[in-house]
Length: 150
Image 1 (cartoon, helix red, strand yellow):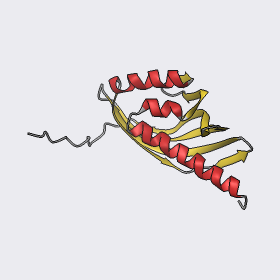
Image 2 (tube, rainbow, N blue to C red):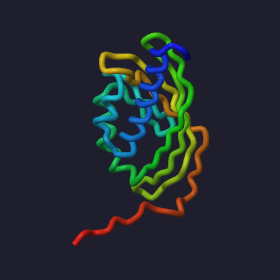
Image 3 (cartoon, one colour):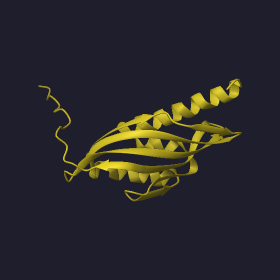
């Protein structure tokens, strides 16, 4: 990795993956949609969700609060393979959450990614979520209660 452009590309792709996690945690699906190319896809076969294009990602995000009570996602760095203005990679993650109907659990998963260099920097061309382990045991904890201000 002696090529400065390759180093810069890897840093930018890693920042893209980090921003995706932040947008997920903050429920900022407008920002999340902008992390994809205009025709980019977010696929989660186990849910099942198959979203193509920024507007589909935004529309799905508007529905999430009606289905998901809370979600905590931790993404860990993985492989990045550069190929000019495209790249592919994997990111590893753990996730814990609960649906509004009370179902909850934890899982370990892999994001299989394809990236595209654009005029706005690196974007996701496709992000596919593959669950490798799922534990649907009831969660013992809960989000902390927020104090009400007088």
